[in-house]
Length: 128
Image (cartoon, rainbow, N blue to C red; front, side, top):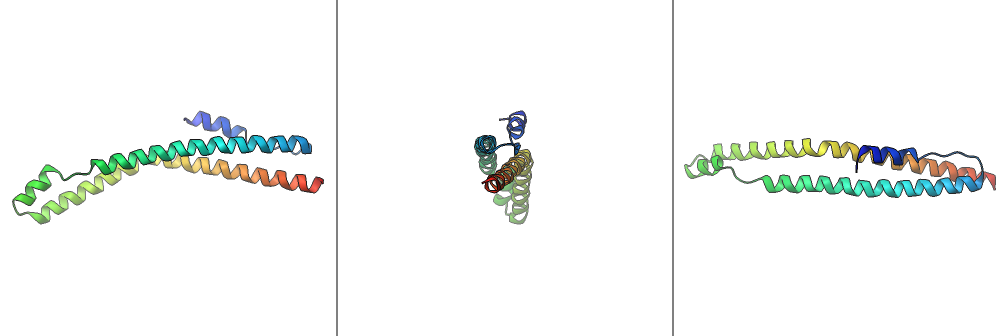
């Protein structure tokens, strides 16, 4: 899965209103492109899930936090744990950001395909 593959599929999202037979074939091509985009989006979601899972597994009490708890410094231990959680959340967000942008781009392409199919349907209805 890469951006070139997505761009190739995006180039298939075209519609020329020339003849009913041609338009019907183009709608089938748009449907196929949308299925491919949805499959890629599932892969992207799996990557995001992997990032989230790794981030949640990375959280554990630091040695410093446990040491502070043992010596009765609960307030400081809590601060250390909170800062660790914030750091992990920032890292998770930074790691998943490119995937989120890719997901948004795929959603835009799927929406564009839906708009093209609506135009095709209007053309076919007006021609009958």
